[in-house]
Amino acid sequence: MARGLREAYDLRQLAAGRQAWPSPAIETLQAWCERVWAGVGERVCLSPTQEAVLWEAAIAAIAGEPQWLDVPATAAAAARGWELARHWMLPLQGAEWKDGRDCEAFLQWARAFAASCEQGGWIASAELPLRLAERLARGLWTPPPVIWLAGFDQLSPTEQQLCQALESAGSQVRTWQSGGAPAIPR
Image 1: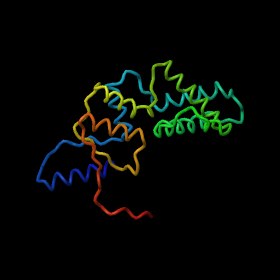
Image 2 (image 1 turned 180 degrees about the horizontal axis):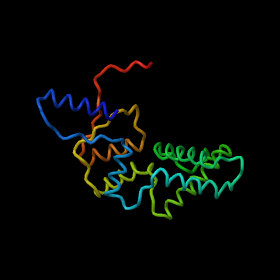
Image 3 (image 1 turned 120 degrees about the vertical axis):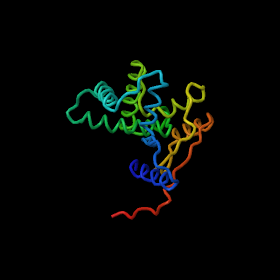
Image 4 (image 1 turned 45 degrees about the vertical axis):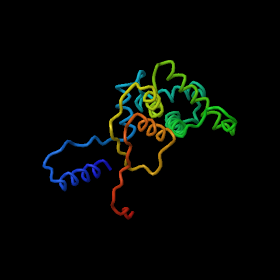
């Protein structure tokens, strides 16, 4: 997608008669959040490998080392569940977490993971959109004047909040429309 966006941008520049132009900064929303956080955040954002280590430690501490449990695979699934829960702003309390042993286990692991992050002074990457929105609301960083979004079918609630915070801080958040016909899958 990044290559296609660069090509479309370059074609627009050529059509406008330009012979040279700065390259656009095109990156995933996650990479953008991590880059911005590195400059404005007070806590260290964990890498995927660091998060995996913490998830494995949380699961091993609670479940022990049963031979039937593939801890690395379980940690990867739990990390993905955590990311979804954070992006969709699911509260980690409530009766729905008592719906079965799997839900209860995940909740225990998630709480242990969050406690490890808190103790270490770290932040999980799934927390970045909301944390950046909070910092914007407090005026702790200045966003770029225009931000383009491309390739989103639907924004999660945390992504929506970040976009609203960006707009409240004066940024224009625009959605890129390719203008082309949808590709035919083969």
